[in-house]
Image (cartoon, rainbow, N blue to C red; front, side, top):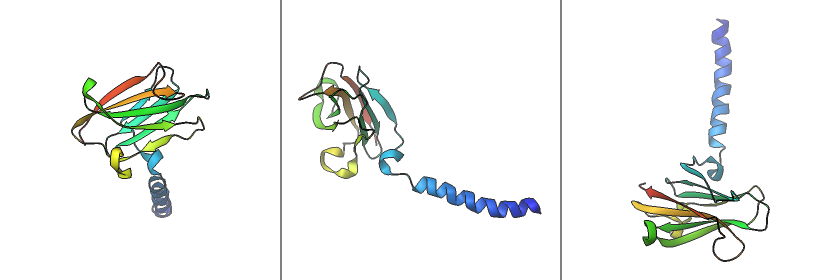
Length: 139
């Protein structure tokens, strides 16, 4: 009997706690990243990607005056075409995000190869040490 009474009090509290953890997560931090971390060669730039919703996150991880950039292209190999770039200009613990619901160039096409180049920069283009990652966007 005592176990039944205890469960009657504990289970509702546990259910509320579980719901608040699930519902309290924001989009940027709640995405389950399918890909990443993807780093440039210096590990000063780090990116993550999830196909569902085309979520992309780029983070500057070094305080050195450079910023992190994710260059996004659609297509395979040398046939890839520039789509957009996503910079994170400060190593302040906050990253930059994009997602399909932002519309336009951020809504990546399905059934296409997507290339994400992760690099560091102080101006136009990428410094040495860029790395490119390819995935097939089948969602």
